[in-house]
Length: 345
Image (cartoon, rainbow, N blue to C red; front, side, top):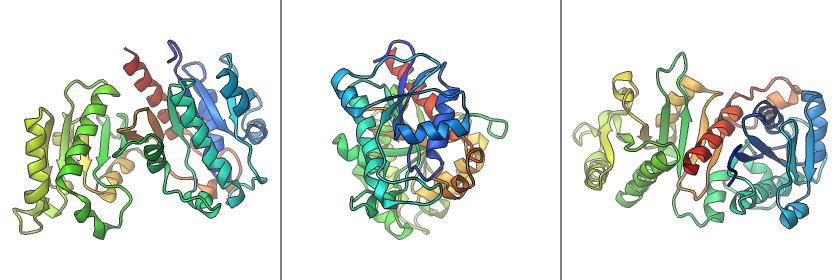
């Protein structure tokens, strides 16, 4: 691990989207605080950099050279790019499945860079899942890919944002389930998986966020948290028993709370994380408060991985450079570096 500036691998995402631009801009803006290492097509990024800001200086390194001698040194006024060449010309805003394999290769290389300790953490720009699938490679998403490649049985998706003018304190929302049809959510929430989710959240809030005794508030699944069983029994049969068991293990967990009233200052002011039962129960609140400045964090992995809180924005990319907001990428890179620093202590 680096002893001074954290070295952060940043995959630039779908080349036809805003990922390459926001990765370039955020890396350049943060170069004095940490060492960002972009993972993408070096020639394309060089061309794009000349449009974004002619002052940006890039230094390409091949995958072969990386594996032979590791990451080369680099000054604070230059950004290293690990070259993952694309297979087709990029047209902003237009997906091309011929580039699907190259996009996936950026994940392969970035993960290897962290596992080999050339880099300290991993940040991902948004990609288009369909591009990789249309290239003939089954792919369900960053989170599932990194879990599979690291042999991690269960991971937890958490979005976080810092305090702001509209938000009195930092807010973190983790999910018991992620990208599932609503009709399947109840069947997936079981005792063992929910308990494991709480354990992962508690452990990572301690190790990656420096919280000695993190307080976790758990939302109910049903309206009014089931209203004593009249609106559903998941709270009685699964969620409450899991909370009680987690408490017996020493975790600072409480609930289940009705989700429609949980996101109030009187509950959140002393909370470190809210566990929502499904995607659209918790994330609309966080994204309303912080869209463009939130960070997606994968908990449970044997490495640090953060990402932006938005997608590829092909419509913005089509307009040319200068329309995309790099805020979420900048916060994601900085948050990864902060977690690296905490774990180094």
